[in-house]
Amino acid sequence: MAEEKEKLTIVMFSGDLDKALAGFILATTAASMGMDVSMYFTFWGLNIIKRNEGSIKSKGLARKLLGLINRGGSKRLKLSKFNMFGLGTWMMKRLMKETNMPSVDEFITMAKEMGVKLIPCSTTCGVMGLPEDAFRGEVDSLAGAAFFLGEARKSKVTLFI
Amino acid sequence: MKADQTLDCVGLYCPMPVVKTAEKIKELKTGEVLEVIADDKGIKQDMPAWCQTTGHEFLGIEEAGAEIRVYVKKAHD
Image 1 (tube, rainbow over the protein chains, first blue to last red):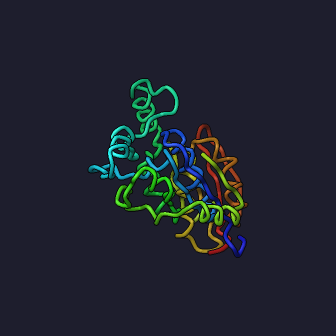
Image 2 (cartoon, one colour; image 1 turned 135 degrees about the vertical axis):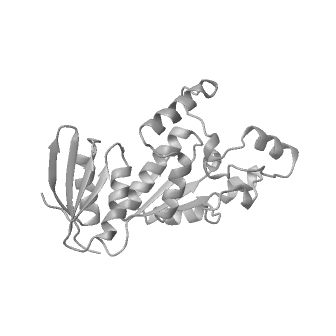
Image 3 (tube, helix red, strand yellow; image 1 turned 30 degrees about the horizontal axis):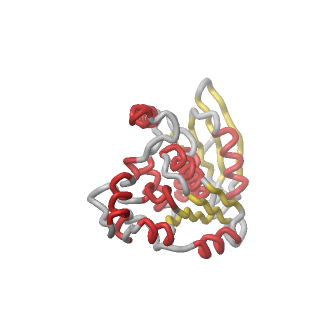
């Protein structure tokens, strides 16, 4: 194995259940291969790492409304296709359970245990008015585009999901 | 093939066999052999690739019906 660990950086832009799974499968596999992994969550991707419990308090009417229709949380994610008012997502979750596939929730815990860094984008948090306590405990501190590019420059693999 | 430890991954799909192997191999001493039993065919491609990246030695595959046994020798700490 190389002295300096190889790096994988993933931009998690989408808040869709299927895309979140793809991201976490690659992140945990890379970590198991000894790679240094950072996942950078921006826009709808932030929904993946919002905490599932309680309410998230944002200031201002527009942001409150956005929070209402865009609550997020790993357990509320939907399929990007065939959601069919939740029926498709419910079916997929059932199939995943039947095949012993971890849920997004379990993947987040697993990734964190394996040393994957989970970084929320500070700009999106600012625009959407998300306080730092909007996120689950596993999440690392906020960072901006310069931080991401700094990581990406050193990465062997960079993905945008 | 003789192994020092066995990891049962039957019923698990990618990425779990590889993720569990990475965890399990920490328990072995350098030079010891880990046997991974799986039924996801992807492991036949995934485990050699995992070994190549991590530097552990891929010893081979034994197949019996749906059961796939993969052998990995721990090459370093």
